[in-house]
Amino acid sequence: MRFLPPLLLLAACVPAFPQGAPVLELTDFSGVWAERVHEDSYERSGGPPLGDYQGIPLNDAGRRKADSHDHSEWSLPEFQCRPHSAPYQWRALGSVRFWNEVDPIGRDLRAIHVEYLRSLDRVIYMDGRPHPPEYAPYSWSGFSTGKWVGNTLVVTTDHIKASYLRRNGASFSDKATMQEFIDRHGDYLTITMILTDPVWLEEPFIQTTNYALDTHTALTYYPCTVSEENISTAVPHFLPGTTEHLKDAAGWIPPIAARGGAESTYPDYREKLKQAAKP
Image (cartoon, rainbow, N blue to C red; front, side, top):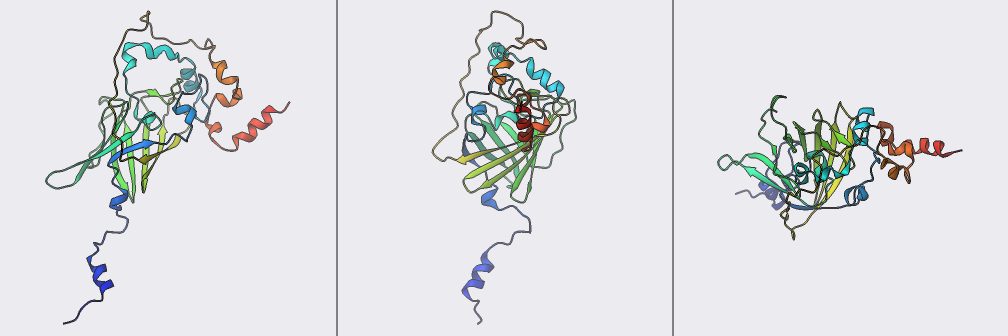
């Protein structure tokens, strides 16, 4: 009888995956991941000042929309417990939890569920279903489908309600669509988000966010109680040209940079600021 050498026998026992197939340990995001607030930390903690849109490719219409923002709108009962929208959630404070929905018979992955501190269950469908027609209902999370490209989960989302990109009024419209590229590197998760909005953005808005796996924590319950805090029934806002608070940002940020725009998202924009600062 002929025996195989030990190394060949071991190789014969390892299952062969097709070329380009995802590696299982890198494509299972199940568990709770804690935020790592080292990217734009001031934006994610206390929040940016009114009028600071640097790094956001707002067009003129988007800038006007942001300028009209009055932060006291959060006192309205219908706004107090609204969840963050899908494009903002990755940069919001709090952990994120992933879990898989698996077909109990065929064992196929039907969907990946994502839940943040201030949100409902967000479903990323993995079963190849089409996106709904334009007239279908919109939600804060939108409608998401995903597919694996190697070890990267690529998510496409539409049907998102118009909402804020930052808490100072910089926003996107309900015509926006979003793509996310989610990669796992051991115990770290990197999310690259690309938001395209033909209404309020000059070009796609791109940002990355990191999380770390935390097996000693659980996603906490988010308590929210609606209360009547506003003595007026009007929606707080500022008419064009009347937002005095915009000077807060301009006091320590070069005014031209605080206004945002596509060119402010590129590294060579610093040279333009240096030239503008010269007498």
